[in-house]
Image (tube, rainbow, N blue to C red):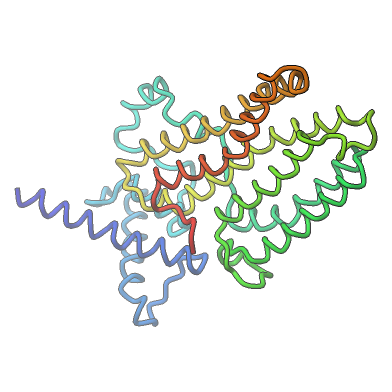
Length: 320
């Protein structure tokens, strides 16, 4: 089928150019491709043609090869502008009820995400919350010192992270990718939470605050699935989604939604397990075993979840 073969070639050619544009956007933070630069001229000509075709399509002139999926992908990079929400695909009307029934993107749509600038600002401002929590919770001097240690270590870590242009300023050496950064953040949080659970008397200012220290650890556990899922979805939108063909987007979002669900289930399950085991840890042997098992599973969670994400989406940028 010559027509089919020609269409496949054109489709592959379009996605090759699109991936080139996505790579340019990731590197420079914009899509202002220059015609005067010999290395960018062909991409600039292609982008100009796409913008022209998109304008015609949106005005009612259906250009061959221009589809809502392509327009949405270009709009996601800021290459074209659409006045309203992303255009529905040609088959959206027939499949929307099916998608709703299957719960295709429920978790995916529920979970927020952040761009590079938002991540950058948050990573510098959020750590100051920890000393504040420990101070308001009347924690011990040991707890306050450890929380300040985490703030200093995290700030250095943030200065070494490449969040992408134009966000990563100032940084010392951009050695760490955001996913690596967030995994290290989980290590910081897990160290505090494990400490409050294992030796609450060290973190609580006196025996009367031992229970307060324990419950602070439990409260901090609830922040971890939020942090992890926002981190994973942000990377998914920035590095993975732009490489996926339109026909596979729905399935990829469903897979991302399942990872988000697993993340919440993991930590929500860990909370009652740890509380139950803590109640019996000093009185029953089984309580001690449950306590140790619960802590091991709890601390293994971020590594297992990140590993599952990287296996499912090889395009994820974990390494520089």
